[in-house]
Amino acid sequence: MYEDALARVDLFSGLRYKELTQIAKCCREARYSPGSVLLSQGEKGLGLFIITKGTVRITRANGPGGAEEVLATAGMADIVGEMALLDDLPRSATVTAVDEVSVLVLPKGEFRMILRHILSTDPDVGLDLLAVLTRRLREAQNRAYE
Image 1 (spheres, rainbow, N blue to C red):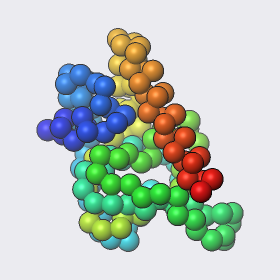
Image 2: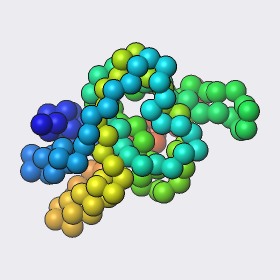
Image 3: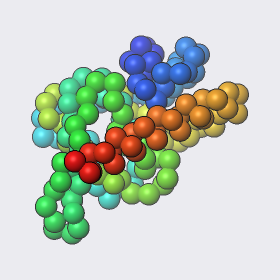
Image 4: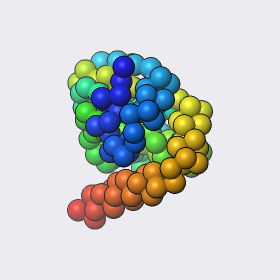
């Protein structure tokens, strides 16, 4: 179903086909037209978005009524929205479709359930996940210093 798309995502690249199939069964497909907002800064995180087509712009408002700052763009095989699923804090940025965008949405509950199962059976996956998240944090910090 969606296993091939999931295997291209760095967060899931170390998983076996069986685990990818578990994740794929929980995903639903969604499409967004240019200018549509996928995620809004400050909202509760209800799902992880895996981009399968198109490009999104990730922005953050600097304070109430402040100017929007472009943090990054993301495209095919990138994920957005994972931070709010892991730390239970509101979304830290807004994600907007630049062009026609297709995503796989993995709901928070299923994401956490699958993650717990995978970590209990293969703890090394946890190290891989931490490496991916740390790399993304470093990239974000490097962009902030540029």
